Each structure stands twice: as structure tokens, then as C-alpha cells.
Length: 195
Length: 195
DNA sequence: TCCGTTTTTGACTGATCAGTCCATAATTGA
DNA sequence: TCAATTATGGACTGATCAGTCAAAAACGGA
Image (tube, rainbow over all chains, first blue to last red; front, side, top):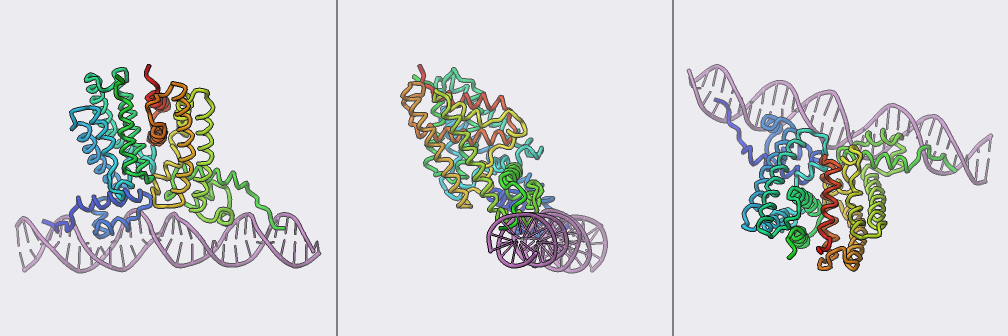
């Protein structure tokens, strides 16, 4: 019994994610946002609260989606080592203009560090899910014999996670797809059992 | 034959570096800067051009200093593998409030990506110096037998560099010193020759 | 048809932004 | 002592910032 919203909230959120992703929080103006989202100013504040709330929702949504992709790539292959490789290689899109955006989550670390508790929380949850699943696959790989059983699975997982961040920074810095794909594969090979 | 400057330009630049380091470029106002630098507004513009020029100079100076530290840590130990370990471990300060700043260079990647050609140039030069020196030490380690001679030295160097970025992102995200030190050492061990 | 509710639109707010202007002060060389 | 030059301090600029307000518009239910 009220006037219905004219725009697609999800589509608007996606547009906002893309703006924040490319420009960061501080360098994005509300004018940038309403333009990209194709909605009026008041609709913006009605539907999303304010700039910061929208940013939190953007990071949250981005991260939920990204985490899903990571877990898929990690889990799909039968071989755990291949899963790790796909996880890392899958971070790096072939498309230049996509790859050079890097990762919104990593960007939010750079921009806010530990200053925003809500972002820290969000991050920790997303990371810990991936970290746990990586460690599981590492143990699986160790019992299959393809991953060095002398390694601590949790530490391998942590190192893989660090490598993910590093790759995304390199992508944002402009590194090429081939180079980064090779590097990702090389990184994973460091865990393979020496015959 | 003119009035001499009253403030220490280097000290003011150092103060500016610290502000940019903590807050990033966009979130730092010129008011923040003149406050932290302890100088007047006009002196600021006289001595440093404008906000962007000061930022470039800040990143440049920060990076020159950081690169010097990296090369020292990498080169000082007799053992190349120890050099690599010191390089990575040395990235992570014990002091919490320092460690959680991460790296200004990495932050500038996050904030500007490939959009600013001058920053891209600066970065590439700094990185390539370190990369070259890492590869040299890797080859040295290979001929000494402590680093797996089957590995491509350039690729090891690239992976070490990625690991540096990853560690700095993790530090900025709030990871603990002990955890990161252990991780740094663990990462380097992946290159050791298996007996 | 009309009422209550929500969305939309566009003008508007005070605050802050980066950067400039100008008058005054401090210095050196003549 | 004075002229030329540069530094300083503080007021000032127009632009842009995030966010608000109020009126009109669009819907469902009565």
C-alpha cells in the first residue's frame, strides 16, 4: 500500500560495488554513486542508509560472492593440489581491465586497516572460512601423498592466503595475466612432495 | 639574499609521510598535513608544490628508504637463504602500531592501481632493483646447494616479492607479529633443497 | 474515489575541500 | 641603510562534500 521502488536494488548495489572497487571509499563521492547506480539522491539514502553503510554492504556482498568462487575452485578438482592451483590461478582474470582492479577486500584492508571494527569482523569471517577449507584440502593432499606430509597444514593454508593477497596486489599494480598465472602455479608446486 | 626557511624540510616531509601512510592520499586533507608538518599553509605550497606532488615525494622517499632496508637485510647474512628469511621477517615490525600501518608503497598500489603513470614508474623501478638482487642471492644459494637448483631463480624472486606484498597486507589487516614471522620463515623454507 | 504510505525529484544546507592572495617579516648583498 | 627576495600568517575563494528537506507522484486498500 505504498509507491513501489522503481529501480532494482541489487543492480544498484552491483553498480556501487564497481565504483568502490575501482576508486576506493574516500575517493568515491555520493554523486559518483548515484550517477553509476542510476537513482536519485533521496532514493540512495532511503535504500542504503548512507555512504559508509553502502560501502559495508558492498564489501560484504563482494566478499560473499568472492568467497563462493574461491571455495568452488578449491573444492571442484579431485586433486587437492590442483584445487590449490585453481584457487590461485582463478584469482587472476585474463581480462586486463578486470584484473587490474585487484580485489575489493584487499583494497579495503589498504584503505581502512584495523581502524574500522565492522570491516575487520567481516574480513576475519570471510578469511577464516577459506583458510579452514584450504587446510582441509592440504591434509587431504597429504594423505594422498601429493602434498609434503612434513608440512603443517594450517601454515600452508596461511601461506596460500598470503599468496592470494600478494597476487591481487600485483594484479592491481598492473602485472600481466600470464606472468601471474605462472607464478600462482609455481607457488603451489612448492608444497608438492619431493619424490 | 632572502628570508631563510624556518622549518626543517626533511622533518616536515617525514611528518607528511606518516600521515599519508596512516590515512592514504584521498582521506588526508591539506589541513591534516600542515598540522602534522607544523608549518603554515603557504609554506606548505611554497616548499612542496601541492598535495599530489607532496604525495609523490613522500612515496618516493619512503620507497628509497624501504628499498635500502630490504637490500641490507637481504645482503648482510652470509647464507642466501638466511638473507631471504631476514628480508621477509624484517618486513614485520614487532611494534603493533607500526606493523599495522603496513607499507606505504602497497597502499599506493591499492589506492591508485595503474591510474597514475608516475606512481607506476616509481614502483617498477623500486621493485625491479629488489627483484634483481633477490634473484642474484637465489642463484648464489643454488650454487651453494642450500636452495633447490631445479628452481628458476627469477620465478623464486617474483614469488618472494609477492610474498612480501602479502605479508604487508596481512600486517595492515592486523595479523600478529609472531604469526607473520613464522609465516615468513616458513615461506622461505619452501625453497630449500630437499636432502 | 480518496486515504495512507512510500518513492521520487530537485533544490538546498553547512561543512570542508584544495588552493590563492596579500600584507608583513626576515634575510643578504649593495 | 636600503633594495631585492623569499618565507610566513591569516583571511579568503569557488568548488565540492555528505546529507536533508519538502513537495509532488505513484501505488494499494478501503
